[in-house]
Length: 175
Image: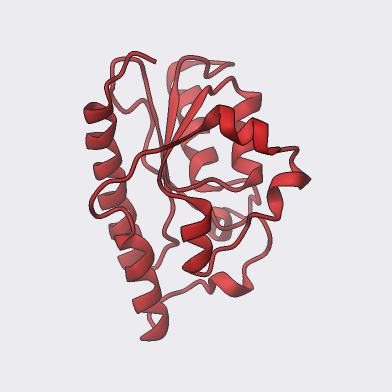
């Protein structure tokens, strides 16, 4: 991947901003976006659409990958990078691997996300995401306000404004 870290950080910052807006609209604090080798977003800023579509695979990262494949008429996403505001669950990592994604940059890792109430770490073995598979894909890409969507989600939840409850989500629906 020839895209520089500062370029990726800029797109990640935009993803976090989109994620915060999505949380403020009642959504979950996860956004995924694909970036091409030119550093430009190659997909929508995907959000979790499981509840609204009834599609159990409509996680943020999968929404973004599907959009890129449709938008660019692709069968493979080799050469693209996924940016995720929260580290992907097992389903999203598996989807990325199966479509040729080589790198997933993450603003907030799975352990920190679990601390916010979204603990989907148990989904990794179910989708064959071993430590080695994760290590091949995962790259931290912290941005200064990366945790804001999660803290805002918790604030909305405790004030009664959030529509989803992370502790009661079905396995695999968080990202």
